[in-house]
Amino acid sequence: MYLVTPFIMLRLLARGVRYRDYHRRWRERFGFPSAPAVSGSLWVHAVSVGEVNAAEPLIKALRDSYPNAPLVVTTVTPTGSERVRQLFGDSVVHVYLPYDLPFAVSRFLQRVRPRLAIIVETEIWPNLYFACRRRGIPLMIVNARLSERSLRGYKPMGGLVRSALSCVCLIAAQSRTDAARYHLLGADPSTILVSGNMKFDMPVADGAVPAGEELRQQWGRLRPVWIAGSTHEGEEMPVLEAHLEVLKRLPDALLLIAPRHPERFKMVEHSARSLGFSVATRSADRVPSESHQVFVIDAMGELMPFYAAADLAFVGGSLIPIGGHNVLEPAALSTPVLVGPHTFNFEEITLTLIREGGGARVKGKEDLGKEVLRLLLDTARRERMGASARVVFDSERGAVRRVMGLIDKQLQE
Image (cartoon, rainbow, N blue to C red; front, side, top):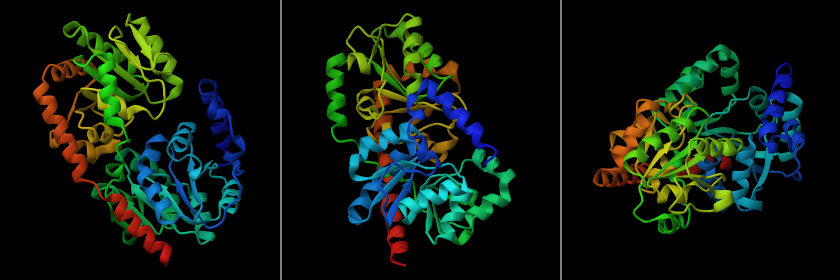
């Protein structure tokens, strides 16, 4: 870790050129939290936006069940930090998780003094885990997932990862597949159980549906509208090209596009303009008018009303081998879901959604426009898909209640 830290710093400097928040709060990366010291805290680590969204119902449950315990939430990315602030304000203490250097980890734990450490999804940092064990801090991994790709990535460090996992008192996996992979990685089978996916328990944002209805009224109630959410570099241009294909048949169609990372907002806007689209943005125009063909959602944490307003949603990170993003957000709003071929980060959820008729998969970039057009022209199929998506979402809820039962038991020991 000491050897690779200079390279990590260089990467952060480079990312900070495009997104300045990476240049702020550097001291926290080395275990000097800017927040005041606390004691007996409940500490939840959620690496970035997706994990923070998954942890939202759990954090709220912890806040309600243990109102007197300081609640510390750590992230790695500035976008994750921003999402914590949006969701919880000053009701939680937010700091960046330090690099996995022994002195930084020790200083961080001394500052927040957790009564319980809760890692969301997949973050295996050996020095951090060893330090928790030395200090007698119970460590849980909840909503645990492990893709085949991640499993292969950890294999070269098998002995070290097994030692780190031996520090974990409980792994609450999203699915049987995730549980089996943690076992293959070296976790003690007696510490592994399946609790389900907490993302099914995420609350539908208050007012998302009426806000979506209001948006539809503003840009034209009968317009065909589709959204591409959480897109990455290598996906935005195929999405824009797909919209060109859609416009040939449906000239009044509107594309809403929400890049995953803020540093890509301007690039996507420029790309859309360079292709000749009439473009509006959330920051400059707030909502698109009837004359706009592409609307860039250049804001964080505002997807839900736009998912509610769209006729169908393409969820990004899936046309390229990123592994996909959260298909449950549109599903919760009865919006049909499209994904690309790469969905290994949300494997079982995506397969369930497709199997039950709430989603569909496109084979590649060249097929996206055809499938979007096919769905926009078939109202009955979209309505069936939307209803099925909501049924899948509702049927899988309850993971947070199960995880809270495990946390309560741990804190009572």
